[in-house]
Length: 110
Picture 1 (cartoon, rainbow, N blue to C red):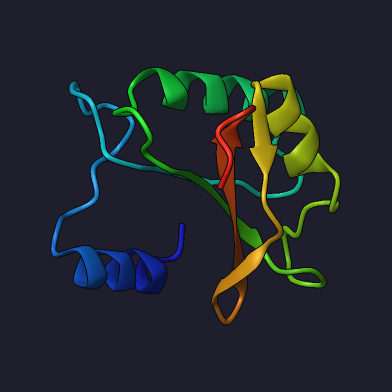
Picture 2: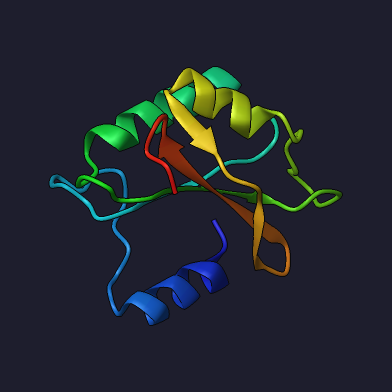
């Protein structure tokens, strides 16, 4: 992951981010994903993350922007999200080299 992005998130929220070993419900999940990681593993990770989320909490998948090292194919995140029962939004810039995609459960609306 990118420490500058982590620091910005912590600064905006006023909270420290926790890792996957945190043992309680969370109010949001950030998944860092790069090309070369297994798409099925991404779908599994999304499903695991949704199991620990508080109701209505967001999941974001952060990935390198196109033409950056580790950039994913544009269809990988939506495909993995669909497998996990989620819709993927249009990517948004979250840092100079990173895009973020917000995931929502099917049928959750805006």
